[in-house]
Length: 199
Image (tube, rainbow, N blue to C red; front, side):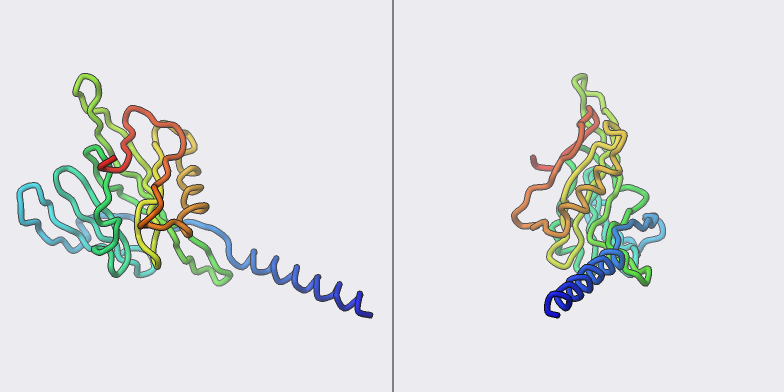
């Protein structure tokens, strides 16, 4: 009798685990980023282009700052105070036009994003001091627990760049410690690739 009872309990636990796995699946939602539709605050210096406050997915705010031909992008209600608001790429760069929100989709269809993926434009000086244009997918961790860059993928040197960026987001973003962990570079790096500023 006890053996039958244990078997029944084990089957119930397996069924519950399977149902939980199906209830939450990893998915993406895409939203545009158009700075012309955002609230702009002008900068105070010539090379300070100001900041923009934009609407993101599910009420998550998007903060963009720019200056000296570089962009900074952060997310959430306290975006300005997050590490991402001070992170940019080493080359001259610009923010992307779309945001991929990567997260877990519940059975009711709601997505709880834990990371974003954005395609930044870059311009790296080559051997002849000529600008080599590139594109870098920047994976950013979302809060709680900090908002910061998790990793980078050269979008032109890797035919599966989007899949690589999603891999970084899915496998690293949730456990990533902004104050301790170093961002990941995944895949091939071409001449237009630019890593984090200051490294």
